[in-house]
Image (cartoon, rainbow, N blue to C red; front, top):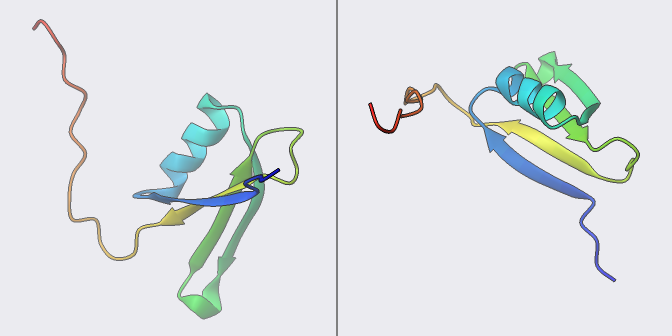
Length: 77
């Protein structure tokens, strides 16, 4: 049987992603490490409670943000 233990998700903002995955989806932080020797690279992983062998890496998209998220559209207005 095949199982996925680790996956990577590209995110525009690691703090926003961390809030979403922990507060909205109920996941827990597996690791949150900033490496100054690598230009303040942040290694951030989360996973579902009770499944220690599963980790989702929230990887920051490199470079400056080149777009601004649009607010959700309101249908019928």
